[in-house]
Image: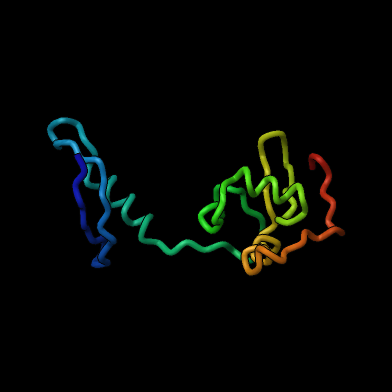
Length: 118
């Protein structure tokens, strides 16, 4: 069963969301958790212009899957990943902004050749 929760934190109205609901006596979700989740959903998402980001930090801005983005990276049609280790990959935010502003005409910067692992 789902229930709509609306709440306010310090007078700020939060966006109502549907959350799984169990009776408070049955050990369900506490109101504090629900308010925290709703507050996080109400925040406007943005990508910093400087620095680096992991895929999970910018995937909400992409209209396609992680695998399609990886394929575009291999073809030079998406930003080149920077490998910090076997399971740690980052992308430069400046390149991501360039890509997101015009994804069809984007070409990866050929002068930037990251090493396999830094």
